Image 1 (tube, rainbow, N blue to C red):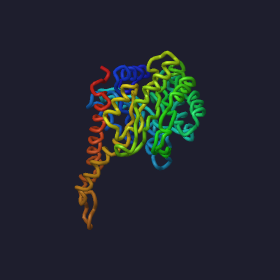
Image 2: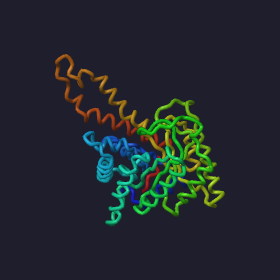
Image 3: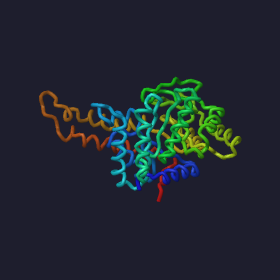
Image 4: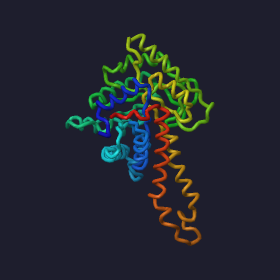
Length: 340
């Protein structure tokens, strides 16, 4: 059962919350990066989450028509087959989806899973993300209510982002400023609108200074201790201890201390994209520079087929990204925690 059933996915998240570890959620854009993520999880003996962004799905759909649903469904179906060869369990997830892409991405994908569930099958994806951070909180939560009901009916978990994450992610940009911090009032309004599990399970991407993309230490002020305040504020009103399952976005460049604090305060999922992109591409660049006269037909020569064969440098890329995934598992304490 390499692809988690709804029951197993819930168990995975519960185990992470109780054990104060988190699953790396690795963005993939190809069969190669999918295998790299699966390999990294397997080598770390960690379960994990594989995710596809709108841009990733468009790329997977091919440059002829760039259909996001086609790309996401195709890779998900592929994952259901190839993941069976890996001795770990993974959940399939779709990453950031803003309002203007809901009708061309998340809503159709929920319908695909709803049709599967109606036939007695498991959903194709185990969770989807609604990114309403560019909307007012009222509009964000109203759409979240609609999507949560549909997701729950299709046995899917919803991820919601209620306040902005800085930087740029697939064309959605937020400035790096003081608005990048979720308040207790934001969390209370979320609990009131979406419930605390009785309306369907959801993951919460709260903001504590997070920024997508690449940044050097000191350029961004992360306050993961804020998550404790959000948990406590909602727990006080509703009488449910540690009510939220948090997601850590924009984690590239985070310190070990910042990650540890986030884990202690309820983070069960941490997204990785920028770092794994570099880890995949760096060995390819190295190969190209070292084998310049082999990968190119220089000065009328014929090159060296074995050096420009995509399998040659593709294997290096897979290995490089897999190493970065194992490092993420170690940082998030998920190493060795796979379901037995």
